[in-house]
Image 1 (spheres, rainbow, N blue to C red):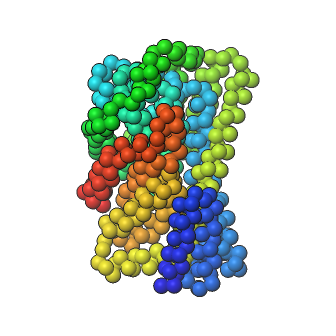
Image 2: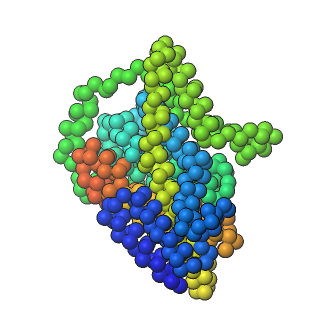
Image 3: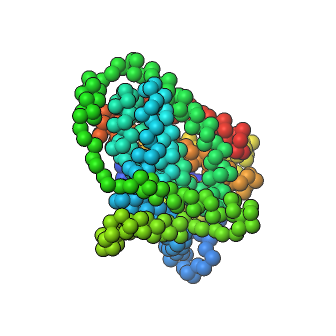
Length: 462
C-alpha cells in the first residue's frame, strides 16, 4: 500500500511538471529513479529485479538505467534512429515532393471540395506511411497538398483541419509507438501491423472521413469563408511553383523500406517457405544505398552524393535526442512503477472490484489520452505505460498487443486534439489561423473515433 501511495505522489508530480511544460525526458528519468530508490528503501515487492546485479542495492538503481539504455539503443532505438535519418535524407533529395506529385495528381479532377478534402486525407495516409513524423508530414503537406486544395476550392480551415489530422493514427514502420508496441509484445512489426492494426484501422479511417466531410461542411456554413481566402486563391494561381529537377521515379524511394519490411518477413514470404527476415535498420541502410545510386545516376557527382548522406546521420542524431532518450526515460519510469509494487497493487485492486481487462484498458487509455493532450505528444505517455503492459496482460491471460493497441491508438487521438502539438501549431502558423480553432473543428471526428476505438477494442481485439 505504501508503494502505491508513493507512486501516486510521483505520478501527480510528473503530471504537474509536464503540464508546466517541463522537459519530459528528464522528468520521467528522475521520477523512475526516485521510484527505484524508494523500492529499495522500503524493501518493496517485487523490488529491483536484475539478471546481473552489481552486489549493491544503491548501484543496482543505476544498473537498471544502464541495462535499459543499452538494450534500447541496440534494438528499438537503432530502428527509430535509422528511420529518422532516412526521413531526413529523403527530405534532402526532395523525394517526398516526387511522391506527392505521383500520388496527389488525381486530386485535381475531383469537383466537390469536401470530397476532395477527404481524398486528400487518404493521400496523407499513404504518404504518412513513408513520412512517420507528424510535424514533418504536416509541413510537407502544407507545401504540397495545401495549395492544391485551396486552388480546387477547399476552404482554408477545411484544408488545414485535414492536414492537421493526418497522423491521427500511428501507422507504419517509422512510428516509434508502433515499433515499441511490437517490441514489447514480443512480435515482429509486420505481424503487429497486419494482425492487429489493420483490424481497426479501416473502420477508424472511414469514421474519420465521413465525420470530416459533414463536420467541415457544417463549420464552413456556420463560420463562412474567411476574408483572406479569395486573396489566397489568387496568390496561388499567380505565383510560380518552385521548380525542382527531381525525376518522378524518386517517388519510389520513400516507400522502399516499407516494401522490404512488409515483404521480407515470416508473415508474408514465410508462408511460401522463404525464411528471409529483414529488420528495420538493415532495410533502411539498403534503401539509403539504393537512393545513393539513383542520386549518382542523376547528378554524376560522387562527392555531392556522399555529402548528402551526412543528413542521414544528422537525422539519426536528432531522433536519439528527441525520441530514443524519451523512450529510455519512459521505460525507467515504468520499471520504477513495477519495482515499487504499483502495478501489482493496481491489478489486485481491479481484481477485487471484479473488473476485467476491459476496465483496465479503458482507464489506462483515458489516462494516456489526457496526458497526450496536455503534452501535445503521443510518445511520452505511451513510452511510460508500455513497459507495464506485459505483466498486466499475463495476469488477465490476454496477449500484450491486445492491450497495447487501444492504448497506442489513444495517444494519436490525444495528440491530434491538442492545440500545443508541434504539427498543429506549425500548420496553424503557416496558414495564419488559430490552433485552438483548428482543434475545435477536428474535435467531433476525433471524439467519434475514440468511441469507435473502444467498440472495436471489445468487439474485435479483446
